[in-house]
Structure formats: structure tokens, C-alpha cells
Amino acid sequence: MKIYTRKGDEGETSLFGGNRVPKTNALIEAYGTVDELNSHLGVVRSHNPSEQIEQTCRDLQNELFTLGADLATPVSKKEKIARISEKEITQLESLIDEFDVSLESLTYFILPAGTSAAAHLHVCRTVCRRAERLTIRALAETELNKLTIAYLNRLSDLLFTMARFENIASGESESQWKVD
Image (spheres, rainbow, N blue to C red):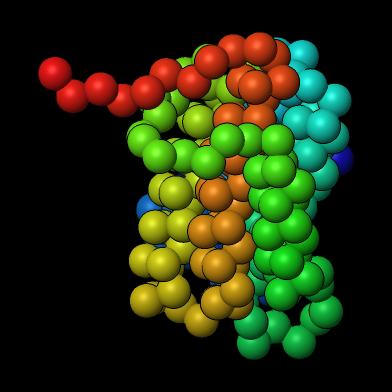
């Protein structure tokens, strides 16, 4: 199979099910940003994070493909595809709790910094927040699985917690936000 189809040369792409939409469509922006997040997680993995962060990033990368497919497939589509459910959201919450056990309670804001892997997890968090905003915008224009928004919201919390965990696991102290 060739990597190019020439079908997008006029600025449109197909959703699962065949509907053609402009590449500037909010839904395309949303799942394109999810794809960007997935790539950033790959960058985190290239920075040799702790084993727990490595495994979690790998698992999240696989799950983000499910999220992208969910966003690209109208909820009215009769074909059965994997969709984000309460189960995935609960799993994210469990991961947050697991990582959080090793962390001190926050009583101040921290700067996104630290090891290369941790700093890039902070980038992942901000890209995830953008994906969440774009998904909310897309929901105003089309029928989507509403659990995708809760998933992205929880995922950004997990990515923040993972960044903190990675710094602590690497012996890196957190940079506190200080107002002069």
C-alpha cells in the first residue's frame, strides 16, 4: 500500500465512515492534536525515563490511538470500534493515585522543568489540554463520545503527576514558582 493517496490534496480528509470534511474542521484539529501528543510521548520515551514512566507512556501511546479512532468515528456509526469508556478514565485515576503516593503534597505552583523526560511530560500536559479544548469545540459542532473530554482532562492530570514523579525518581528537585 502506498503512503500517499492524493485524496487530501484539495484540503479535505475522510472521517471513518467516509464523510469528507475540511482539514481545518475542529474534529480534525482535535484528533490531530491527540496524534501530536502521542508523538511527544514518544519523545519522552527517547529520554530514558524511569521504568514506570516508560511503561506508562507506552501504554498511553496505544490508548491514544483508540482515542483518535473514537474521535474520527461518528457515534452514530453502526460499525463497532473501540471507544473510550469509564474503564479507561478509572484506569487513569488509578495511575494518578499510584504515582502520587511517592510525591509530597503541593502547597505551591511548580515550574515545568527538571529532567529532559519530566520537562517533556509537562509539554505533553499542555498539548493534552489543547486537545481537550479542541475536543470541546468539536463537540459543539458534531456528535462525539463525551467521555473523550473526561479522558483528556484526567490524562492531563496524570501527565502532570508523571512529570513530578519522574523528577523525584531522578533525584531532581522541583522548581517552585516565586513571585518577586
